Each structure stands twice: as structure tokens, then as C-alpha cells.
Length: 116
Ligand code: SF4
Ligand code: SF4
Image 1 (tube, rainbow, N blue to C red):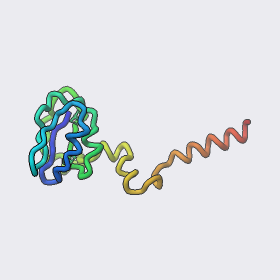
Image 2 (image 1 turned 180 degrees about the vertical axis):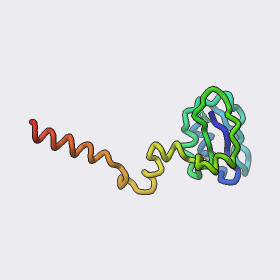
Image 3 (image 1 turned 45 degrees about the vertical axis):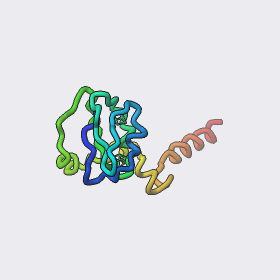
């Protein structure tokens, strides 16, 4: 469930508002969006994945808020952690440089050649 929008990190781009399929956020003029309908969160992580500033934290527990603080999220390096785990940030920084699926394809090609 969505837990935090960090006002220290957020640049109020409102991308999270636009991508959220459950209309959880409300836009605030010249300020970070508010989590207006936390109970409607589907724990889909889209807002965290798309946030360009790693300013959001979605806890994996979909049943309810876990009462985690912004300081704890920061200390544990959790801001943007789901996006990084998916390889999303790697994709941004290094293009396909960090994509290792070619190794799997190369192995399969070699096996096909050896056993046509
Ligand atoms: S996407 Fe991130 S930076 Fe943009 S408004 Fe939402 S929390 Fe703030
Ligand atoms: S996790 Fe999904 S449903 Fe929940 S606030 Fe983010 S985008 Fe909306």
C-alpha cells in the first residue's frame, strides 16, 4: 500500500497522479500530491516505478498501512527500491548495458547449433 510521498524529494510533477489506476492522489497546486484515498490503493507499484525522483514508497503489504516513517524508508534505502529491483533504473542509466538476457539467448543458440 502507498505509504509516503516525500515532500523533500517530490518535485510535484504529478506523474504519479496520472498513472495511478485507483485515483489515490489529489493534485495540490505547487506542492506534492496528497495521498487522499489510501484505502483505494491496489499496491500495483506504478506510482513508484514512474516517479522520476524516487519520492514515493509503496509497501508490499496490500492489507493496510504499516506505519513506516520517512526517516526509516530513507535509512533502509527503500525509496525507489521496487523500481530498481525490476531493473527500471538500470534501464534508464545504462540502456541495455546491464541487460544480461543475451547470455541466456546465446546459450540457447549454442545448444540449438549443437543439437539441430
Ligand atoms: S511522480 Fe514523484 S516527483 Fe512526481 S509528483 Fe509524484 S511523488 Fe512527486
Ligand atoms: S501503488 Fe498503484 S494504486 Fe497504489 S497509489 Fe501507487 S499507482 Fe495508485
